Image (cartoon, rainbow, N blue to C red; front, side, top):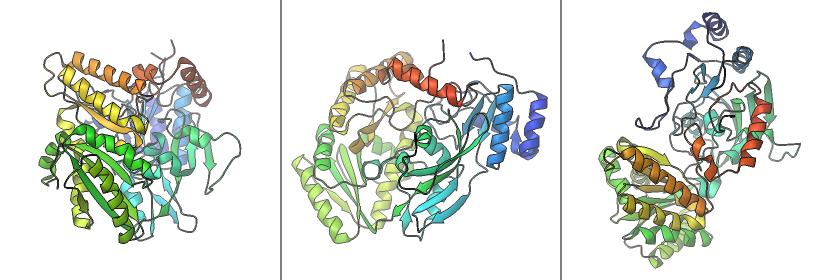
Length: 468
């Protein structure tokens, strides 16, 4: 374990002097909220912080980090705590740096198709700020309470990735604070910038281990005028997932192309009180957007034809907003519907052309291990979510859980995949890095970490294995 300093009474007084006594938490029930993220209780990574500090400006963040660096106090940046890999858990105690006060949408620049927001702004406030502008921010990772700074730090993806890409594609500039307290402004309202190494892109996806985001400049796009959803039911899981590459090769790139199983939908119907509008064992949910209804009808007709050739029947077209809202509400709540019995949600990513083979392997493992492994998610970008369920695993559930997880990672690796495509490494997946990264890659990452954070105070115990 690294040797860190202690949060003393004197240091607490200095922190109070920076942010004010009302923005410091050192005791009480709310402290527990900062000791974990959304990982399931059975496997959760849980550590209590010594203090939670809520800065209100970049200058306060800078002073906190300078103080922590001088006293060798670990600092864990934290957004809304919606992560699933222990990335915002203070594994060495110390300071939790909570950015919830820095939550302002500072500017919507319609001429440059950009907006500037503080890092603690939740996604829902970003979407709301764009209402009525004719512009939209394409990334939609899922939980709209997630904060933009944390979403950038984890390079969040979501259901719109197949058409629009991930968070990295929409961050054009950022104000950041280094672990040593220096404030830097990277990038800006620029579409092109080839000036030296891209430190901005290095920090995106670094999971708060290299710097703290305090402000970001986001690229916007014109809002599509029309949308439709196709639900294509299949009686066989293999037929549904095998249709995905054919749809992608058609040239019609949907906004979202989601694979869903009846096993995922049933508990979500009970949760929401709404009914999925199609029968079948597996489904492709295809969301298309465009300028006119005629354009979308033509696209849907082409995609439906591909589905029928692969065995889809009774294809449903939702062209009314009310019907689309029901479908999207059920899809958005699948995680919540499965959550009570979930041990872990894996986010293995494989090449899109291999997604059918991966899902078939999941089903094989499920049968051989007698384990419930419902699958759903972003089939078109090769990233479906496999829920490892507690249901039916019995008294020795830990052994089965670890064996299933190992087999799934090995299956992803064999197909040219990675262990995490959305949720990040955090603290949870450090022991599994060898499935994806070589020792040389890990050494280079450690060297970069050492340059940015020579005292290893910023989010230690995340992303990289400890030095031996």
